Length: 242
Image (cartoon, rainbow, N blue to C red; front, top):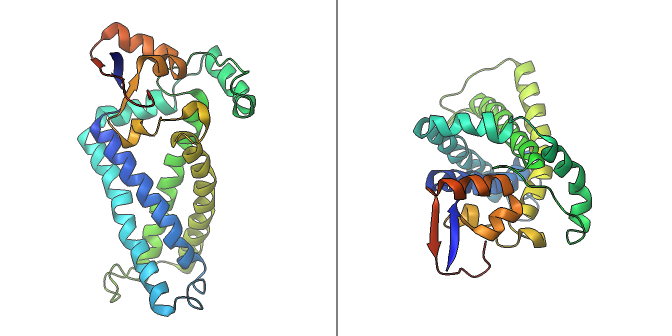
């Protein structure tokens, strides 16, 4: 038997899952918007058009599901920004961020200090992804409305040419920034990096982490949760332990 801590709620996992999958598919379909000729010579114009339309469809859950989560759990939203992203750093947070580059190359030789609910460097990455997503959503809606909300052109809003130009520039810049940070996020979050092996279960599984893994990754948070006991359960060992 092993003690497990419930790290992420169902709402958090569903929101993260929808946003993550939509973001990956948006990046793929967005290539056909950014480079219209990309699929024309290989798959034909109809394929490119389908990818451009799918890009719009995927934007709907990417925007609406997080908004639903905010309305469903406003306290969770406040906690996300106040504590998990913009929380005050202590000396261990600073030390963890400083050691992290070396830890990536020699994890077995670097002792990382204990962390709170979200590791210090991860706060920067999470905050960046949220901000990038907001900029892409707003600029994307401007571009969408400028060509018509529906494929037949209905719902079109005539924005000033300067506004459309800025929206395109912002959308493209934050697209590339999101891809760059997103790859690093996947490398760690999906458990490709050995010390994080199995952590994908935290967002794409039951959201529980074993006591030993919690202590290793988030020492302060683990001690707080174990002391409270509210989110702690004792269950048969799970393969991988994460």
